[in-house]
Image 1 (tube, rainbow, N blue to C red):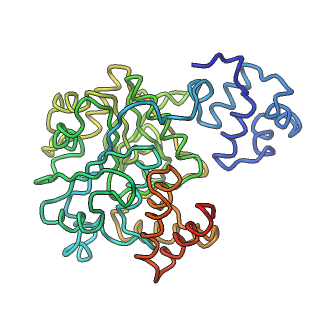
Image 2: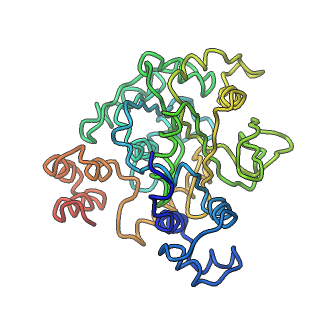
Length: 372
């Protein structure tokens, strides 16, 4: 770990501000100082008081670890990922009577591409996809063994949905003694600072700490909720409370240290006979091994389990991609940027999809050596 006095704190603060889409004027107004003060702080020509640093860290949703630790996690060790894509999708009937929800299109790509891109952004290459028995063949047809993305995909069956935490029992052999992340197959995450958030969660896991991600919602009673103290530390988790203690929903993205399967075995089924993920998080909380990362301004999160949210997500993706003239949450791009696939392999994917804008985007990457 670096010494604090050897780090360019101003540069870290500048990147954190840009990650959440705030201007120097925005921060100056929040701190009740002039914009010139923020400019000098970011340039390193003005000292930051302990009080100012604490307030800036709260605004930017960063911790001392964010400042002290290098962003590179490539040498941090083995890490496993799980995408839970089971269930019957009854809230989307009749659409999902003949096809898995996670195979439905969200604008220009299958829904499962989005959670897959999250794990890939976290530099996770070994991924288990848990599906229903009848749907598994379709996932394999779409994703194969993952080689086209430079990753390793394995598959397992969830006989019937008995809670999210059941994934760690189904995947026990796959996970082994490694830390593990799980993302729900119908969750979509997007934001310029997301990769940094994911890498911090990986560091937490390697330090024995579990991480959950919070997103402010207007109807918290519909979700698992995290209760926070004034410094945004988790002090409680509750599943769909009648009287929520915060507006921060716990999203479908979880990072756990090694031993998560053993921890999941300690959970007792709930009143609805399910192994609740909230119960698993509560075990880590009681051991003082649970942290939260809050996805604030500049981030989008969708739980695409309803007609409305599915349409909203598609419209968001369409708008962002048209504005940027790019494809977001694109596994091929992430793989190429991470040097997991070669230019020739990218070219092969582009040729296979050459008749649409997705394939043409990959072709532009090939012609521009990955630069768009």
